Amino acid sequence: MPDVLLQYEEEIKLAILQTFAMVGVSVLAAILLGLPLGTLLFLSRKGQLLANGFVFSSLNLLVNTIRSFPFLLLVVFLIPFTRLLLGTAIGTAAATVPLAIIAIAHYSRLVEQSLLDVPRGVIEAAVSMGASTREVVLKFLFVEARSGLVLGLTTSIVSFISYSTIMGVVGGGGIGDFAIRYGYQQFQTELMMYMILIMVVLVQLIQFAGTTLARVLDKR
Amino acid sequence: MITLRTVSKTFSEQPVVKAVSLSIDPGEVHGIIGASGAGKSTLLRLMNLLERPDAGEVEFDGQPLMRLPERRLRHVRQEIGMIFQHFHLVSNKTVEQNVDAPLRIARVSKKERSVRVNECLRFVGLESFAGKYPAELSGGQKQRVAIARALANGPRVLLCDEPTSSLDPGTTSEILRVLQEVNRTLGVTVVLVSHEMDVIKSLCDRVTVMEDGEIRETVRIEPAGIPSIDSDAIWFLTQLTEGGGPHA
Image (cartoon, rainbow over all chains, first blue to last red; front, side, top):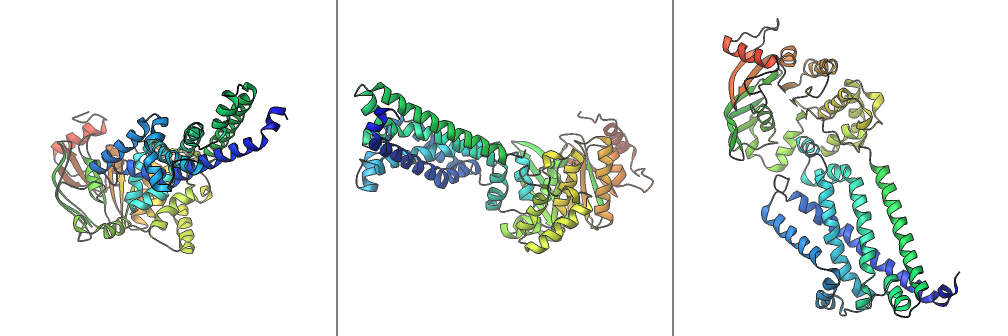
């Protein structure tokens, strides 16, 4: 192993751990809240099962607004909210708050898009056999859209990794922050390059896993 | 069995079904024919409230469907099977899982479900295809799976929306034979929407001719296959048979 990596071994391990924690919370938020939100966006659209102009417009505006913030500004903007929620706006835990919020908005949009790809007729067939809205969603929509949902989540995770790299501004740490402070600001270009390499490998692995899973799930 | 009373439906200010009344008798095969845009598919979709009429009443077995609470309506829908031109199978489910889906919705026990799935697949002659995915099937096979799925909960009526319109002639007669079996062997009332006169003629006891959102007439098709209807309607049907139709 190169000397520069051995020299900072502890710091690098911590940075990787911090990145995993931040991305992990984002993924959880995306699945637990982004998936239902995206489904509601889809269902409240005109002509869909829970068509409701007010609900759709409100959610649509909310998701668009969150996604139109340059992420750095969103982090700063959310500092009071984060402080309210966790008592502090500094540190890895605090950094997960804005990350979770962008994760929910980001993935919900991709969920909506995936559900829009399901042929309308499949929903009609489900309704015609007496399915409730809940059954239509769980037993038909999610089944038919599953490879799209997986690919969307893969794209989202890659974005979350990218977002996590700037969390140094609120002391969130992570690989990106380490690369900037130890690599760039201390003129250790080699160290910075190694950090970038770690990110590249990470993204490749995630994309490969996501694409493979989506392909296996897709029987269309 | 199904009664429509002066039902109307308008899509974006365009009236598609105009105060139509129609009664489907138990046990019959009832055809609905008309040119594209005549409102025949919409009329069919009003029968299980896949579309809600803007005015009028829809009755199934004497129950006014529009006034039923959601839960009851879903229950009634389990007694009304439906198949479509483009089959609408779930492509990520196997043949078996597709047929199983309505049984799960109806909360049928696991043991009974597997019996029913086998019965239905045997009825349409696809028991050896249980583990395949729809993408591995031909159009005719997909439609047969759709029929098996529609029959799973033992419906009393089967609504068919252009069931053969995306199939070749050979496959069409194969599907028509299955539908005839559904009617004769299982005693299921069949409502069949089609723009092809041959399809209607080969199967139906009565046929309703639609034009511009209205019923032009409902006639009985004699066993000989010659409709006993006035010259006007014969002209209309001939036009359709020749693939034209007044609006085509």
